[in-house]
Amino acid sequence: MQIGDIVLIKKGKRKLLGYGEILSDYIFDAEREEYTSIRKVKWIKKGEWDIDFDLVLKTLTIITDYNSDVLKGQKYYQYLLSIMNGNINRVNSKRINLIKYKKQIILQGPPGTGKTREAKLIAKEMLNLQDVKDLEGNDQFKLIQFHPSYTYEDFVRGIVSKPNEDGDGIIYEAENKLLADFAQKALDNYIESNKTNVVVHEDSSIFEAFIENIKDELAQNEHHKYDITEAVYLFSADETRFKYKGDNWVAHSKGLNMKFSELKKIIDSGATERQDIKKMTDVEELTRQHATYFIKIVEKYYTFKQTFKESIPLQHSTELKNYVLLIDEINRANLSSVLGELIYALEYRGEAVESMYAVDNDNKLVLPPNLYIIGTMNTADRSVGHIDYAIRRRFAFVDVLPQDLSNDENIIFDSQLFGQVALLFDSNLSPEFEKKDVQLGHSYFIDKTKEGGSMDIRLEYEIKPILFEYIKDGVLIGEDIEKLIEDLEQSI
Image (cartoon, rainbow, N blue to C red):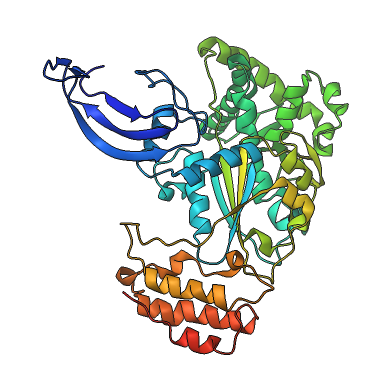
């Protein structure tokens, strides 16, 4: 132990007591009756935090290099500090453990319980971020809100129309939508992280470097050409393809597409001759018809690969990352229809399912183990779609219920008004409803004067209107219910 080290204190197997910084070297204090060997400590955090897993048992243990079993990429000590600093509470810790096991959960509860906020806190921890704000723009996180007209074609895969680059009119192509695209990114990471160092380079880094090398040569060429044969050449490149043509071509004067995905399929198949490509069944018709041009580029790849391997050490590893998709109001869409065949993939992670649409001649879709889905559901909204048993079996449903936040020092909470409204759901609730599904959540009772939302404004324009809607919908009943609502008063 040295000056500047951080020490974490525990009691037994499942209680943390705090942490602090070591300020002194070893001191022997003979005046003490016990614990005579001491060091001075500046305590940063003191208290009691119950946890739901066993701490290390040794009296003094260096845990700097221990990995967290809960969050990938996070150290054990970072996870413990997060608990004591309030970034993870015991409830969220359980939810994180649950989603790691189940892969998809739905946070359900009445309006105003902070379901979306809780979902973002879970996502923050799953991605090992410092703040919820860091989720914005993070390529490992996606947020979408469902609505009743949402379909499979909007969410997974669908047909889109595009201008025909070879002539007039339009063409129709299948393309990945949000889920399929996000799942592919997660799958790519999952596959790369499980490969050996050499394979990672050969299958990924070298190919990417080869593509970039051709792009560089195109940019530096005076005529913006990269020769394939004496008569045909590449003349353009973007993120997904090269364009190629011949000066004497009558048809296709605007050029044809040589997709990187098609080149990768040829390389992965081990094809070395034109006839090998013509026999392939998983490539596009254009690729087979123009096998002569495709094989020429593949040959250039093999030449480049040898040079690349000799010049760059094959030492590379890809870290396994978590990817989190947050679906707000998940039950507002017909979930069975929107997910389609992916209902199966939710349970059997890593197994390919057949989509009704093929992208790059491939119908397969995979939800990898490192893709996590968090849904939120308003249990008071009975106008939304029904979630059938097949969906329910694959998701874990977690209640997020109203709670009195008067002990939270970071907010101003109207505990008295919260109690008055809660009483309405005890004395005037229709027997057709359960209190936990419809009671107004705690976020309605947080004073937002700094944002222009004082409690008198919130009461008149947010709380009372939804309570009166509950009367119309038959949630709240009783002869005097309207007067009880009108007489509600804020206490702060």
